[in-house]
Length: 123
Image (cartoon, rainbow, N blue to C red; front, side, top):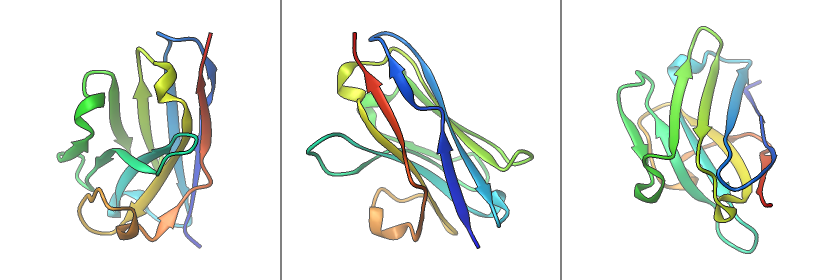
C-alpha cells in the first residue's frame, strides 16, 4: 500500500527555518512526481512546489521562490521542502502528494496524499 508520511513541522519564529520531509513507503518514490501543498486556516489548499520524477523539473509558487526549496533523495525514498525566512503567513498544514506522471498544480491530479504536518510561524 502506497503511504506518504510528512514530518518536520512545528512552531518557529518569524525569520526561522524548517525542513519538511515526505517519506514514502510501499512504493518506489523515484517513479513519482511529488508535490508539496499547504492549507492555511480558512483558505483552500494550494501548491507550494513540485518536483518531477527526474528531479530536473521543479514547479514552484512564484511568491515562494527564493525562500522555499524542494529536493528529493530517492536513495532515502524522501522528498524535502526547505523553508527559510519564514513568515506568519506561511502558517498552515503542509501536505505532500504523489502522482505517476508530471507535476501539476491541480490537487485533483494527485491520487495519493499524506496526513500533513502543521507549521506555525509565530513570535
